[in-house]
Length: 218
Image (cartoon, rainbow, N blue to C red; front, side, top):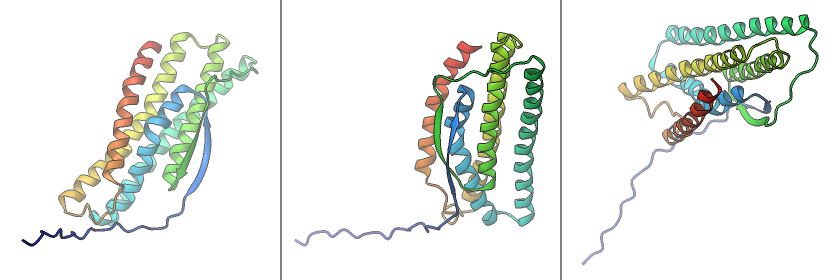
């Protein structure tokens, strides 16, 4: 009796491209900025990559430009609002003659990969958030901000960046759905679904842990 032979099915290999990147290490002091970095940076980076890959396949140049403009406006609006608040807090610090700034017990360093100008902008926003939190902590230590003002302010700014990240990843998810509906998901050569699922699992765990911390803070 002849033995059954296993026929190897051809596998479709994903094309590998050499892309320009910047690798850098950034230091984040505040808990709120660390949360944004840990929860959202990698997801935003992958989302922006997927948007860049998918949109040219499923859409017109006009729509691509429109999405790019909306992303830029969203990021720019948050940046402008942070800069405005930073200037206001800086003036308060100067008006009260404050020179001492707090140090942080558990600063963290992150090795990140910058794959596009938008990714660089989001990383810059996290650094700006870190500076803003430091200013609020400084004013709180010197009695200029009340406990409630500090807690509300740091929480609201943390949520502002988290929501921006969710808007960006939401665009990527809609683009994936459109590519799937058009049968072009494989053609798009996206990041692996395993990586996305893994990241979502990490985010869910962090979210549960941080929700307890945030509830205690507030």
